[in-house]
Length: 316
Ligand code: GLN
Image 1 (cartoon, rainbow, N blue to C red):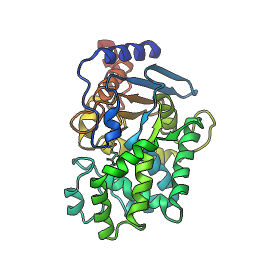
Image 2 (image 1 turned 45 degrees about the horizontal axis):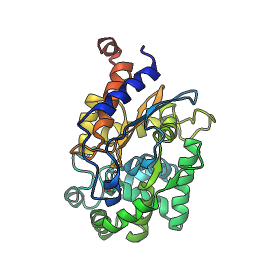
Image 3 (image 1 turned 120 degrees about the horizontal axis):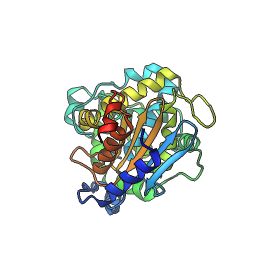
Image 4 (image 1 turned 60 degrees about the vertical axis):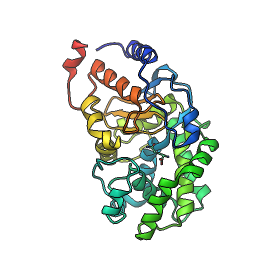
């Protein structure tokens, strides 16, 4: 197997040189100001080591990658009862589709499209003040990453508060259908703020590690979720983590993954590694363009696809 450090170094160099970088998200104006020339990659291993290259120490807006962690928290609170409120089928639609939600009477297809993640946030908020719920999410990420410096980027949250008309429409529609328990404004407030958490690729790779190791936090040995739950969260990441680009991501990369419009992707190699890539330019489905390409190269070179293909490595 090729050496991991030299493989990620080579991929970071290739990504830095590519002219095709995708387009940064502009519907959240603050994200539109990010330089698309950046690329970072970090791979967290079972022993807690992190192998990184490129802009792996730059913070970026994790956006929808946060939905993996809010889903984990909500499942911890509700258990399988959560699935009465949100489905677990791929949507085949854009991440903020209103048409699909109306068609399904306000019950979102899965917890990773915006409507589904808003329901998950509603669940976490119940019985708490918005500040407490947000504090819970932030503390969870800090614990998982082993890093107390992780913060919410208030400018990004305020930017989305000002322009989040589409999410407001989704939330109002769900409220109208009796799907949300709490008032729309505080639910969206918590949602916008957890999307605005800023992390580095190194921190994000570490935070996702429990999903690669049967629910166990590798450094502390703490059991974050049961092996069964880790497996199931990975399954939903594989089928729904990239919205209407999930099939393409499974085909090309072959790993459970979750993207965000900040350009981050968290991908899990069960039993081996948790990978975070970041490049702000997006493809047409709203997923990081170079992030996906980098992961495709990494899984092929390391033979890491969950669908097999160790033989690929020799041919690259
Ligand atoms: N905060 C963003 C939104 O709700 C998250 C979307 C994403 O990352 N795909 O639109």
